[in-house]
Image 1 (cartoon, one colour):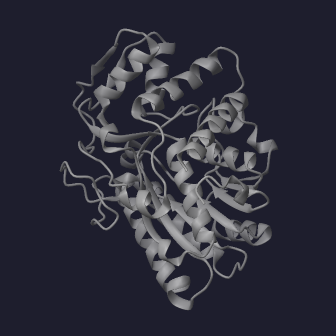
Image 2 (image 1 turned 180 degrees about the vertical axis):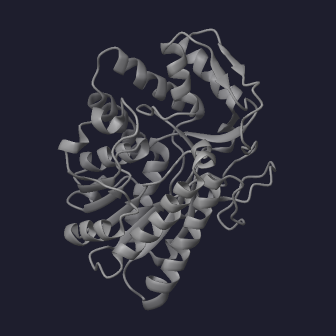
Length: 361
């Protein structure tokens, strides 16, 4: 049932990308729910980073390694015999994919293939959730939200690589898993919107860039202020991943396939609108300007997700709106700067969100 957190107690869960922003939140939440987590990822790329602030390296078995190292990955999975797998390891940045497309394709496509090949024959694995992105769709710059059965595509190497990863997932499912031999392993992919939340220090992301501009008393440079994105707090899609993995574990074969996790349609806001919310929450005068360099690569202008499938079939729905997500995010950074520990802040926000789940059930 929705809100049954006891399911995770004692489960062995393998998480790739556990040192990243979203992976650290997921891993921390899983440990709070009593799961035995095993992480596999490159070392954190930023300093500071949420993985270190949450002391996750001391909380569970953590392997700092490359998802492209297929033999090592297979050895770790065979050794820990997980029941549930979350695949988040990726090159996650659009602009970086222009800089190094080959690493992006190698990591996001072959890394996914390596993971799925590694779990073949590991009988303990019951459910797998592969996290991709809202950018997997062939973007036609239209006003309608994309559904899970809309065509895949990708102008930039990042988006294209994630669309390729979706095809890899589908191929492995049909060729080697439930589609081929009626095995008990169930696999799905999850496509989330633009995620915000405390603990993200990545480059070229809106809220981290805003925080950095405030810290250095500089002006924020914005590439595309009128671009529309499906903004959501990080706990929203993670709750979707947890719920989906649980349902797959319970042998719900009809839940295999792709799933969108995004905000309500009213929260598909422009970059400008999110900035207005953020400066309002901070009680500051807006201080940003449009990037006039003319050197920025192509990025989609209009993007939104249809979440009716997750709402009707999983019982998942967004529990916060854009304003609340911005407030939670900025409060996280303010509390950290004020001397609170990231562990306590994340615990508090997760407990509050779990209460929203219970109340919504």
